[in-house]
Length: 331
Image (tube, rainbow, N blue to C red; front, side, top):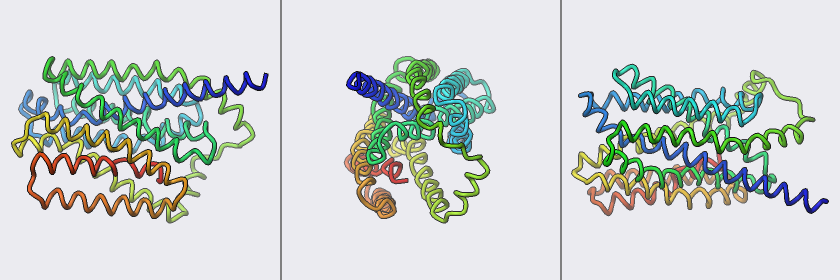
């Protein structure tokens, strides 16, 4: 009987981990491909690049602003409900972007709604649930695995998105990506059992009010330092994914170079997340974060100082990818 229970738990955990990784892959893959829509959308409506860039800036802002609320919603109503609502909002945002006829609808769809959808289906909802399901000594590696899955999504979705734009145009490409966002609802069904299991294992722990939790966290200097570090991290990554395709086009490179560049970032981020996720459970997280940010500064400086060639673009992508989301497990 005990063996059967253990086997059932292992099967449930395996399904949960796979579903978590796939949701993060879709979430991050769709988000990372949005930069490729800047040129066709701007050209279609005669906008300057700053219009769609502002939409993506709103997207990142809303992603950050709504994460505390989606996290609190998941704590109270369960991960499953949060993921379903997040996926629906994500798909709606993509649909509105695909059918946009004004600057306001573009900002609403590509900016506000997609940002909210990313918050409802991303790291802030998935990773805490993943951390609760594994033993404490395996938590850092599990978080690294989940983060690496997001990078795998970037590796897989970006070439597909660019191919869709080339074959069907940007509007149809977005509608197809909206269908991908809805697929997260199917994967979210795995979290029904996980929510029930979590409730039974944590029913002896009294929930802490949000105000009290914020006051406690705000009293720690390290909390504010982590926020500052994550702010810099998000600025760097969002800047690259949004503007790298257009920047390389301005430099005379073919669109395939930008696709390969961002795909290389996704590929090597898998290795970086797994490695730093493993190290985060063994070494000082503070020192690891310091090393990652220092190396990023060196890599970005070298890329801007050296002559820009296909080789330097790919080397920059490899180095940046290795450090891309390596900060997440340690943070």
